[in-house]
Image (tube, rainbow, N blue to C red; front, side, top):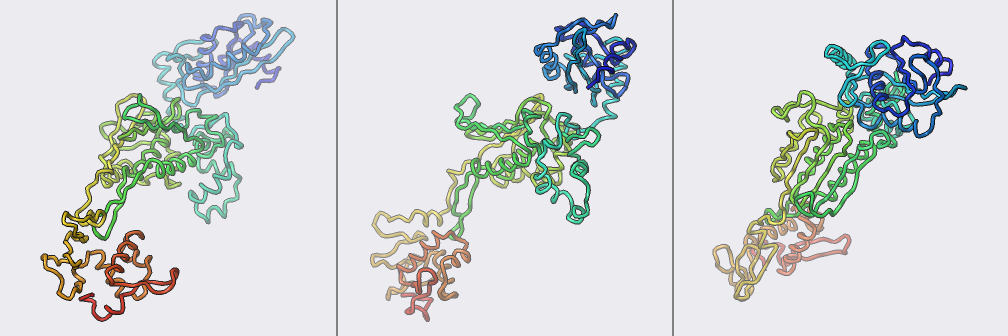
Length: 525
């Protein structure tokens, strides 16, 4: 902010290309063009330019302006109305004299010129304003390249160290990013520690954009659209009824953690399906790993300069994730996903440090492999729609998965038309309740049961009990790799057939072969 004496010198300096004077208070086009020109800093002064309202251009005398709140707000609004891109860094304030007020618009040189107002590049040529020609535009582009940094490396000029969650940085990030020995010997203050990992800009004494996005206390104050919008639709299109509508916002670590939990608890559905008489296998509607990878990538690679959130849409047959910002740098539709490039390189590295994304630039390929492994179709990508990157994953139907014959027999043990009970192998018991063997012949005339004629799962459980006297249910579950309910069901069947008995207390007891069968386990009564 200028002192009154400094302002008086600028008012009288009619040769400077860093000053523009006007008595107008309502010509916003004129003001915006001047702001654009100062931002481009064609003279490469690396110092701010000044638009002075309330000063006559030719005589350098004050016009007697009375600076009202409305005038100040209207001028300040020029910064963020979307007509000047990239947005200028500027401050607006007034300095009062006896002859009237002077409204000072102080404009910092842009780090990434050219700056355009409504698509036109304005520059200062000596004391006047002009439109840049082709050569001047090329010079500004070259300046941009010399200063080039990714968006997340840029200083967040409106922020201070107090806008960061320092505890999160120290407790959650530093131990994963830096070795223990290095941390113990690091006696630097917190600003230098942040700066060493590119979360703080020492030159401007403020956090970088990456610092705010990763550890900001109020991220959306600086980046209003930095959130994920989840919507669940009843049907397969956006015009169907909305069932759930929620947002995930905050620092990036919290967003990713919350999304991972949400996907696991609310998106992923599982169903146990028997794959044999011994084993059950869970089948899932989506690969949880793949969805997490796609969501993390959308947060890392989105453009935070576009005023749109990430859209996370769930339809009745698919998931769609759409993030602002199309393919970046060397990545092109024709080489995707084999070639990758980073719009936000610091954020990408930070997410790898936290273990949220693939470490070897194979995230998309690995996600596709996980989808196929889960039984989903490979994801499809929208690479052509301007300004966005989209991924769509079809849901796997887990309600109509066929069950094999033996598993069906275990799950649905039914009487046949004659009223005789089918055993788990599909063989009929005879009228006396004796089990037929595999060839349809009855067990021996004494009514004894052959071990080999037991259902496979009961045969295996019986053998475990034979080899482990007083064995408990949990041990049987672990040995046979079957759920607790399945184990107790098969144990009950063996007890009903008089093959095993339970001994001891409910807490510490176990199963053993009945004493009458201890020495005769090929034929069992």
